[in-house]
Length: 445
Image 1: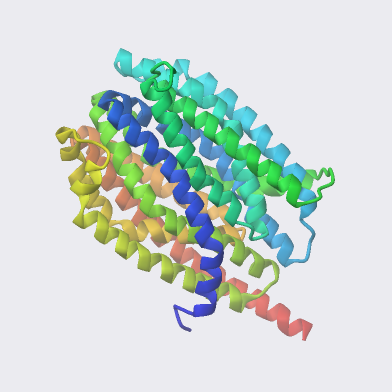
Image 2 (image 1 turned 180 degrees about the horizontal axis):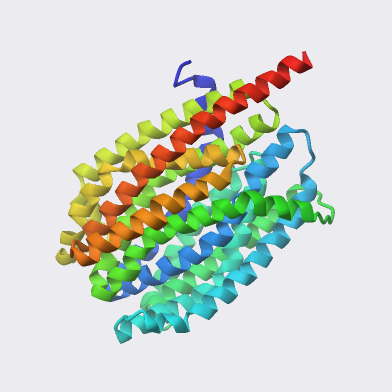
């Protein structure tokens, strides 16, 4: 079987391109925060990095649950089950999760004082986190509505909104941070306020579009929530663990020096931008494979898998080349501080070395979501990131005093291990599915 087939690549990109655009828009929000924070001060950038690292790890619990909606509804559609009735349950679920996450965020703010940051850095981190706590309603609702529409392969508008939101975010950042047009200079608090406003506005626009586009009737189905948790909890735990491994760097190294947290933030923003294309393909794979899985079509399922992985690996080869060849130029976009650039460049070259496994693990995660086999992804992430990455990162980063380089080297090793585990297990899953689906087809004939 060919790895690249025009029909399947075309269908994946038709669905993935708007998602990639939206993912880039979401990443652009982080890029803008990093850019403006770096222009404000290195200390401010360090505070943003630490605050968003902790907050993002918490938020991934809710987002991980919510992103199970599109593969679940795609499986329903493939099995010819109506899905419009699940709109209001989806909205209710998102708002409930947002309320819980807001309370958790507000609760951990006093605990930040026990980590051991210097006083001014701690104050900025706590202020930033307090404001950001109220943005969770916007981001949860936005993700839930995007997932609902994505199951219908309606992806252009919600992802276009993410691009447009970055423009609003840039304008509000400069106004609030530097005090333009009569507003007081709010420093890092201004970045958190801009993020909260943008997330809320985009979610409300998307909600208005959904209510205009469809005619929904109120409906309740606790079985739907059970399925979201069944598929989503392993995804949620897996994503939280992965984010913890990445954000652990900023959290622990921020105690050594704020410069490490600031440098980590820049590296993470650059690598995350490269990651948006495989993530978009991963989302498209989850939907397409979910539909094929629901329809019990093994041949289509395998073709989407091979073409999706092939395209992902091709792009990540290009991404590795860019990171390897231009690390200083990429760092200089965000800061003119030579000390920061000196910390960033060798790590950026290291990050280039594991772009292939980074992209492959994203594609594999989408495949597992489409197959509704997410529990094993969680187990693999626990082994690779929670056990290996954090242990190695602490040993190399702190005890061996390799700091940023040591922590990122640990992530690279974990990424390679994760890909190996997921690939081997997927091989056996597909063998079993082939037997089940082709056997059912022969029985029907």
